[in-house]
Amino acid sequence: MAINYVCRHCNHQVGKLDQQSVSAQQLGFDHLNDSERLEMIDYKTNGDMTVKTICEDCQEALQRNPQFHELETFIQ
Image 1 (cartoon, helix red, strand yellow):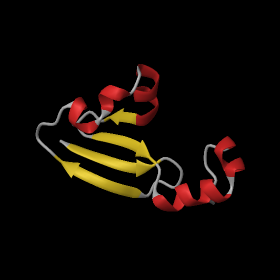
Image 2: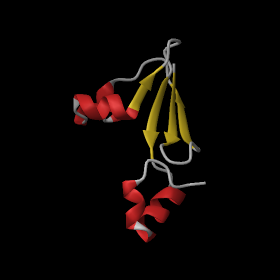
Image 3: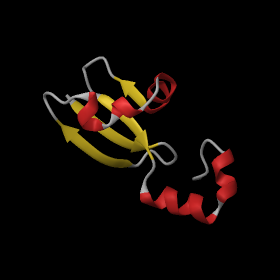
Image 4: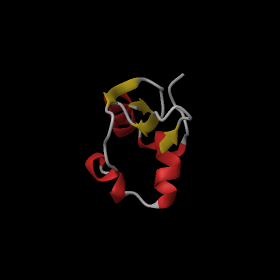
C-alpha cells in the first residue's frame, strides 16, 4: 500500500510512504472529521491512498496573497 501526498493546488507530489500496514492514528487521520477525510483523502481500488496537502511553494504563495484562499487553484 502506498500513501501519496499531493499538493491540492499544483498537484506536485510532496511525499510518498510505502507501508504494508499503518494506522489512521499513526498518520494523524484520527484528528480529522468525516467531511475533512472525504475532502483530503482519496482511496484507490488497489489499496493506495492519495492525501491532499499543500506544498511549500503554494503555502508561500498563499501567505503572500491571502486572496488566493478563495480559489480552488491559483497556479496557472
